[in-house]
Image 1 (cartoon, rainbow, N blue to C red):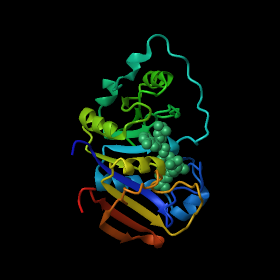
Image 2 (cartoon, protein in one colour; image 1 turned 60 degrees about the vertical axis):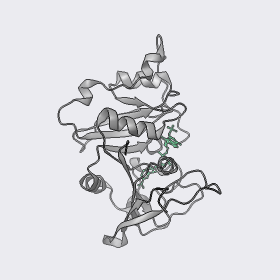
Image 3 (cartoon, helix red, strand yellow; image 1 turned 45 degrees about the horizontal axis):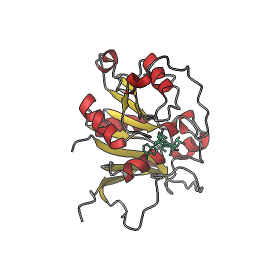
Image 4 (tube, protein in one colour; image 1 turned 90 degrees about the vertical axis):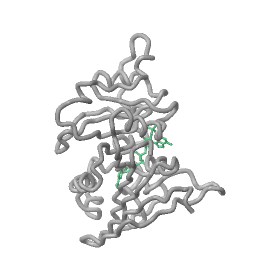
Length: 253
Ligand SMILES: NC(=O)c1ccc[n+]([C@@H]2O[C@H](COP(=O)([O-])OP(=O)(O)OC[C@H]3O[C@@H](n4cnc5c(N)ncnc54)[C@H](OP(=O)(O)O)[C@@H]3O)[C@@H](O)[C@H]2O)c1
């Protein structure tokens, strides 16, 4: 395989909802979610032990609501072309104690980062995936903050190309996506998901627009559902069920 292995992991209600309603961002905490889904602190430790990923992947939707107006950034002086090359500052890439990359897709340059490293995540550093249409002001902002980025794709991030770059430029062999439904849906439709791991908790959330496991364009008449092969099913405490499935490649009948 010429790209890293991709595992999608999510915590979902029995009806596959990833949050309580559109634009309820769990990152900022919600007592109703915590009450039904339980604490999330140990999830990442378990994922690190199981998959030994070098990348955890998120989408911008985990950090900013869809209608958020990002804080304006100063204009770029001079020719912005040089900004559209991968920015991998050696002092970050080769820093001591490197464990992995906390990586976010943000082709529209919407997220303003408060932190580059995170409490309890020693050795993990922020990395952003951008595209050729990402505003130059945002790339200049990332460079000023010494936040590494990879450029892949034109309008949006070309997810396959970005994964290939993670492999070729940073030696990444396993990515765990803990993103929301739209990024996971885009990965699925692009044929980039190798394993799906879901922890279902015993509640139903409903909603017409509430993010769910794989939010993506509907199947066309000539497209088939993604077939899965069970790896394991574990009944956990308090009625939770963890399911792990291998994605069956499309050409296998
Ligand atoms: N329960 C859980 O396990 C869990 C996990 C994560 C998040 N959540 C919740 O889920 C919600 C966020 O989910 P969401 O679906 O709104 O956001 P999301 O999954 O973050 O999806 C939006 C991101 O996907 C990218 N994207 C979408 N389609 C793409 C495509 N075709 N090609 C390339 N990139 C593409 C977007 O890129 P652009 O920047 O280019 O638009 C953006 O970065 C939040 O409420 C969050 O709290 C729950």
